[in-house]
Image (cartoon, rainbow, N blue to C red; front, side):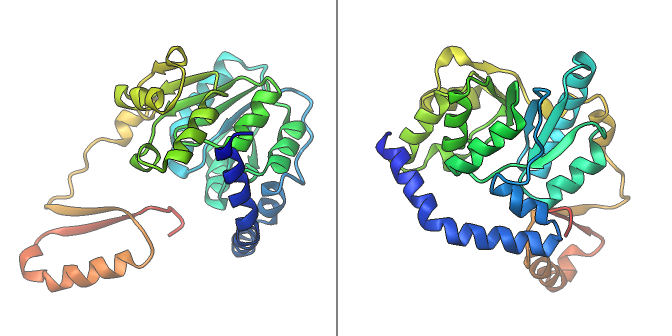
Length: 267
């Protein structure tokens, strides 16, 4: 075991009580106790049909994955699909937008035992991980079971690129477990290689968020009839601050519209 992986697992052990409390709070708040069980790698459906597994952590990633899921079902109608998310919001969106025969499960926390139980229950034929997720224990268990692992629409945040040296080494080890990386841009492709991915496994795919034919209609400009200011991806308490500032600037903003688009749809 590398020093980086040892430190990572030790950190997870130390944080385990807080992680459990947070997941229990999240489950209680949403009334979704399935979340708490499945995040521990328990209460999982026992699959025997070797499904294709796709993980989308955020709502945005799930929306981006939707045309891919539809295309996979059309191309391989005989292969079942399992989708994982980590939040009740993602679960609700999966139930609303995905075909009824696509099963949703919560991804377990990146604990060795939890991820091992998850893989033994689902028995996926391949794993598709959307965008930014790099989980050392999960990826190690996937590799141990010889499951093909592909990062789709891969991107690396500035935080991942500029992180501590020991975490970069851990990422490099984790990326060695990946079968292929389909990067959304040349910059991201180069970043994966610099972080430790094998160059011949990194491919430039482009951003699949624009792959859906419906996206053209969804992104057409809307004429609001007047100038506006868009506050996008706002978080808790930020809307109140924005409203206060907007009122203070009433003279400068006269005739303009303030549009607020929260980061989390349930807000």
